[in-house]
Length: 278
Image (cartoon, rainbow, N blue to C red; front, side):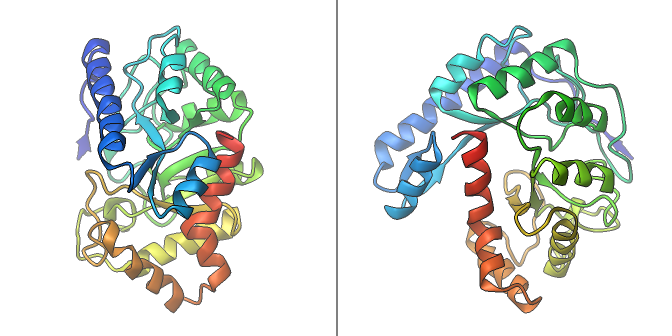
């Protein structure tokens, strides 16, 4: 069954939603600044860690609030956006996302529009990370050609193990590895299971299996956690962010040593963000 992401919101509606979310972040920091921090640089992230605060790096998934000329990027950067996925799983003015179907390949639809190519170049100039998760394969290769940064897919898995179009083929993984890029291991069961089911009764061994395959292709420095807690079906043994320790234990049981766990749980993201946002 093919599942469409539907029509994207209008520019006006997306702009209102984005502005409201940015205001909410600032309100949260104003009210709970002893516990959370909006981070604009890696130095901010490390300072928040030292102060035992939750470090927030602001991300947009689906850039419908940005015009074809990308003039909004400067404002978004000033408000704290440091990561951006041009597409969700539907087309917009920048290109095409992979549809939410199973099984399927990411090679569906055309590449980035002229506006999409302009968006990639503009984000590179400002130091906003480009996220390839949800982007179709033609768009992936356009970003690979245009971007001067390592390739990043923040929450995707291995297509060879789970044939969802949201997952990455071996050829895509090789391209990410060639740039010294990174893939965030996604917890969504429909991108883990070979049947594509949204089933919370999914073993953490599948997460370990995908992580092993990612490490095989990308090296120990090219894999991190990508979670996807917002809106995805997560294995019940994790549930939410408080259950991540169960995944850590599954990695330990699989033979991952302390140095590799340190990389997966934090250091690889910190190192990559240092290259992407400074």
